[in-house]
Length: 171
Image 1: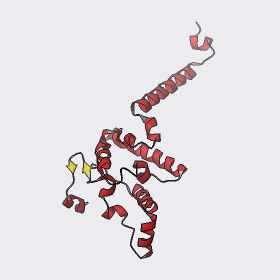
Image 2 (image 1 turned 180 degrees about the horizontal axis):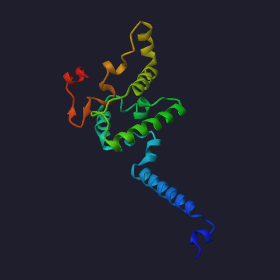
Image 3 (image 1 turned 30 degrees about the vertical axis):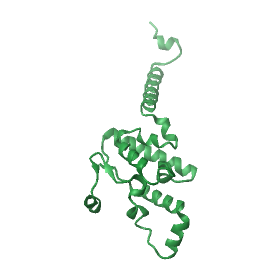
Image 4 (image 1 turned 60 degrees about the vertical axis):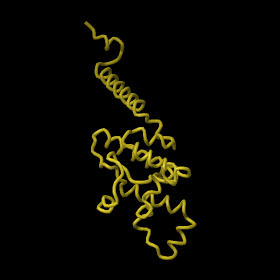
């Protein structure tokens, strides 16, 4: 008796491989749709709140001083096109990993690499003012947000609500 896969010209290993590829592709497409993956290619700040963990940051940004002039990508991603999408891909990987395995810090804290991007964007947007400060010997190594922490998101928040001044100092 001949195998039906053999009679159609497709070997059993190839059939198994095609089924595995189909399952993997289907699962990937489902995950992309369920996780609203395409929205992360936009500059819409609501995409940052797709994940419920970021809702406090989104809500506080809406009340902060920069919400009318800067969206998430303006501060948190590099400006050049290629670097922007490389950073989006890297951040997307770490965000999806962290939220899938629930191994992220709470409240969410910016990583050093992203903190440098944020600092560079502060200096770029506010270049006329920052150029004068830096030319007069001001130290920018601690970052603009060291003193201006509430500019982007208002009071710092986590799932437990606003942090107190003493909690900020101890971090």
